[in-house]
Amino acid sequence: MSPTLSVSDNRVVYPVVIEGERVWLREFEAADGPAVQRWTGDVAVVQYVPLGPTDDEGARRYVASIVAEASVSERSTYTLAVMERDGNDPIGAVALTVDSTRHRRGELGYLLRQDRWGRGLATEAARLVVDFAFRDLGLHRVWAVCDPENQASGAVLTKLGMQREGLLRHDLLIGDEWRDSALYAVLEDDWDAEAVYL
Ligand SMILES: CC(C)(COP(=O)(O)OP(=O)(O)OC[C@H]1O[C@@H](n2cnc3c(N)ncnc32)[C@H](O)[C@@H]1OP(=O)(O)O)[C@@H](O)C(=O)NCCC(=O)NCCS
Image 1 (cartoon, rainbow, N blue to C red):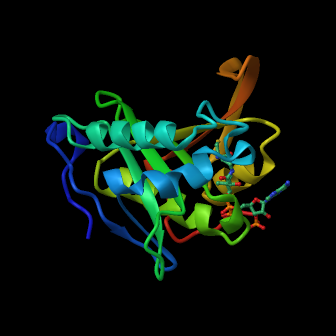
Image 2 (image 1 turned 60 degrees about the vertical axis):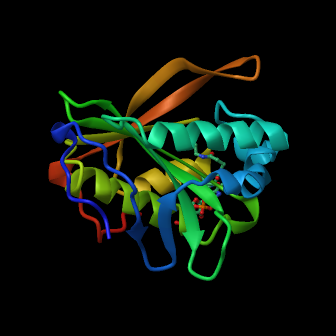
């Protein structure tokens, strides 16, 4: 069950639990560090994102920062653990960061453990959090950036109904390399939680 507070309420929306068909989303806990290291420590998972690769201690600190962000007053970051129906450990993370309450705008991001790729799970998790952003937080625009070479991520955003709006040059410094980002977004009026766009 998800909370029904608007982002304009300026109140803490915590804890968030969102139920899906094959995955569900919950808040991270300090004990998730070792499970999280399975993807933050994988160079294939973090090659397009400004994160890691981390060792055990790095993953522990990363989880601690997510836990701390979740409980601040006027919460703006919802980094949620992606859980399988029959699993105890998170298999990934999906994040919604409200970057403007005035403009009711938030950024979507996601990562999944490599051995779970290709099953539609990232699309389902991202769909759940975008729906949460529009329905529960009252956002108007959800956007995401994705490396133009990251075809799997581009496919996830397209399947959600996000439109590619342009290219941000040298948007991210990944390792020691400047990377461009393709910019995608969906507006609340266009959002259809049931639709699959090909
Ligand atoms: C991006 C990521 C989350 C996708 O996870 P996933 O669970 O495999 O995604 P889904 O299965 O929901 O959808 C992936 C889509 O990409 C497609 N795809 C995968 N690799 C592809 C490739 N090399 N070229 C074209 N399409 C590709 C799949 O076919 C699938 O589309 P389909 O359902 O129409 O067949 C996962 O690859 C990942 O964690 N990558 C590393 C982190 C990352 O890049 N995060 C995004 C940052 S912007």
